[in-house]
Image 1 (cartoon, helix red, strand yellow):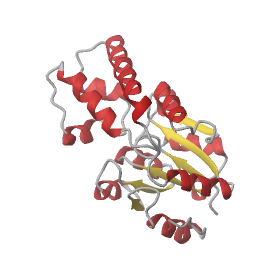
Image 2 (cartoon, rainbow, N blue to C red):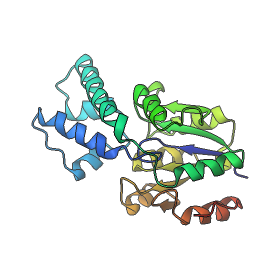
Image 3 (cartoon, rainbow, N blue to C red):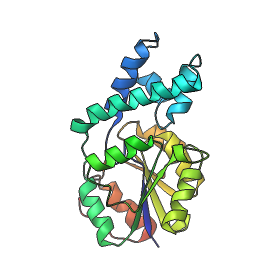
Image 4 (spheres, rainbow, N blue to C red):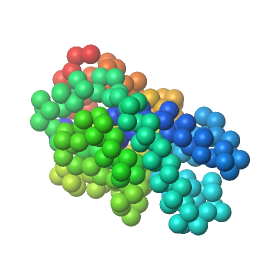
Length: 225
């Protein structure tokens, strides 16, 4: 029986990817690091800032790395204030979640300030009873811990939940926690998401495949696109 829906944030509730890509590209050009889409998908998507900076800028001290991360995220928030919108079909799907009295959580690797800022801009802070932030745990995604904590906080078993994720890293996290996971192909090709373990892939929350997933795996009538 379906009791809870767990959502990633970046790329799932909203497509923040173009903003992150632009900011990272501009900042790293100062270090003669050229960022194209292939490079971005390989080193950035779904990862914690601390891990990204340690890989790409090992010459920075931990303090310098933290300052770089803070600068990057301040620039992200500056752009996001006017550019963030909900992913297509999300509002209607969240109404469906509410009507079915399902528990709901956000499970994200976004820095804490960004996570709360994005939820505020999207007017979703009050909708989610649980927000799990990987940076505040011992392990972030792709480790299963963020989703395991999410399950614990909403009080359901993995078999009673479904997760929505846009990155291979996030999918591996949710799948490793035992959750049936749907890939959202907003930032990656569907093949990359299924290879990471996604059971199915949707383009956005208007995709009719979503109805099929809900009916096939949980016997719940999905919303009409």
